[in-house]
View 1 (cartoon, one colour):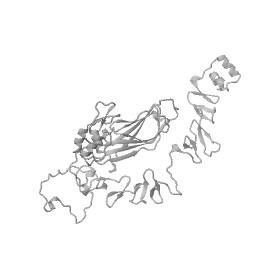
View 2 (tube, rainbow, N blue to C red):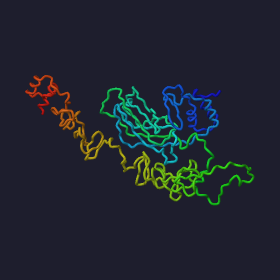
View 3 (cartoon, rainbow, N blue to C red):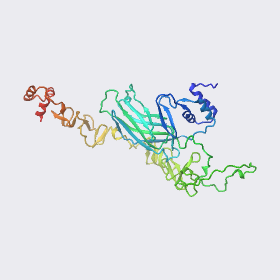
View 4 (cartoon, rainbow, N blue to C red):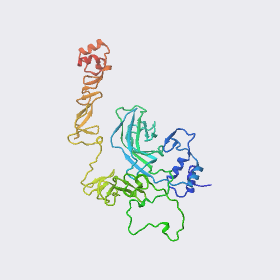
Length: 477
């Protein structure tokens, strides 16, 4: 019997590793997916990749068939290298309204323009969100893949009353396993208030990032004989010839099955030497540039992606210095723009983590995060504006140099200051003694009493106004 320090659930995986000594960490995950038995589990949903897979929100892919895993492990071919493709939404505030759904969509090619990040077949997906919300337990978050698979990332939590929201919080799902990465992804956020909240305080989705993990090759496709594509895109070295078994003295004579030669069309980025397949990574030379390395494989591209520069002489995409997004060479002082989180120091054409003494960061906070405005501007709800919006009045707080736009009393369309100073009301309201009162609630309690209030000029007093609204309104008119 196999002994181990872990629990019973670890035994099948250890036996699988023993059956096949060299396996990447991800390979057993593919074993579990292929040999899980979800029958009888609650909450099953189906996901669509190249095959239909049943999965439970509570128990994943189900009960593991350990025997089938061990048998397959003996002949298992390791899965292709894992790639990670990341895409971030534009930093634009989207409001999350109570009892409504917010749908934020993002399209991706799976980073097809970057060979070392290209994801075609998905494994797991991570969503990172920046959400501001007065009670985050009221939120439910779902992710909908290009194939239509709905994954619940977050359910409502009755006892989570935190007002901190989710600041760069990551959620992960495997419900899209085996699907294609390319297409439009939708983040669906539902706000269902579980208790009374201020309806004017809305949640905000400020930014979200989609992180796709998977491979550019099909993980279960039987790979044929490996082409030595290291020769493609390489300039042969003079005086060196590739030795074949036939040229080695004493080599045993044997008859090998010749691989069928490819006679189809080449990719449009392939050069005059042709190709041994239809895709851009089957080219024997390139028209424009080659991207990648001998280890990871090379592909032909029309232009080099971010993080690389174009070596015209060698027709290669060369990697920029660490931190550079665009560059003209490999050196640290050959940057033209920087990756997210770094600042471009134009004097030295370098990317730095902090600006040197005497310089400042001109990529400051967004429009809704201002704490000080320019001299000709006023601050309104953390924004800098030239004039106050309807429903706000201009104010200059004592002791502060910053001029402000403060909110008028409720239902005022315009006002002269704080308190009862309305000058215009919203539709459906009437202006009474510089207050806005709803038309439908403006009635008299007693006609005789209200005539007395009017004749004694008591409408200015709030108590009498409440009982004799219609009469006082007519007086005001």
